[in-house]
Amino acid sequence: MIGVLVSGAGSNLQALLDAGLPVGAVASNVPGAPALDRAATAGVPTGVFALEAYPSREARDVAMADWLEARGATLVVCAGYMHLLTPAFLERFPDRVVNVHPALLPAFPGAHAVRDALEAGVSETGATVHLVDEGVDTGRALRRETVPVLPGDTVDTLHARIREVEHRILPEVVGELCDA
Ligand code: GRF
Image 1: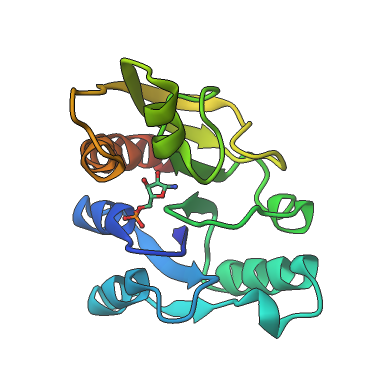
Image 2 (image 1 turned 90 degrees about the vertical axis):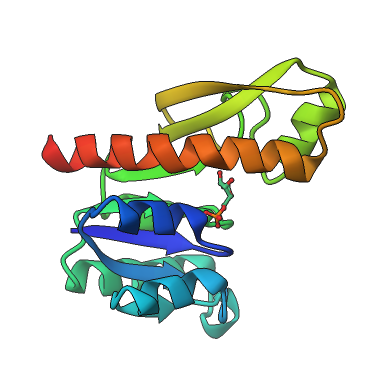
């Protein structure tokens, strides 16, 4: 069963749900994140693990791992989850935490990948699905796909085209990991 971590809109979560993948729990660090509504609509249990509610980041991550494990999660997908995961979380799911990132890693890691690629003036960027380690978008890449930067692109137009790729490659890679 797949546990999904979200912080925002949840379009990648929706892609996983629409692909019929066995999503069994959705956790967010952001109360009220629209992604939680998508999970609820799909009948998937949701949990909120806001940092402010815990004495430390590790304590939050342990609580979140406990909650996911109790629901049977054996694979964790970060789908627009905007916090770093501590070793306290990662050691619970060794090599079983993946993330989708809106750039061709190792280029443009971090929270502003689309803006950074535009500002750098590159002619192409893309999307990467990768394993999560303790670094910022440093884990081993499982799939990378290029997206051209078009004349007149804004962060929004470029990110929209990158998201289209994410919505295809994330369910593909997650499906492969489920089958493995
Ligand atoms: C995606 O572009 C993902 O790569 C990045 O954050 C965005 C999340 O979008 N980490 P959504 O919440 O899945 O719509």
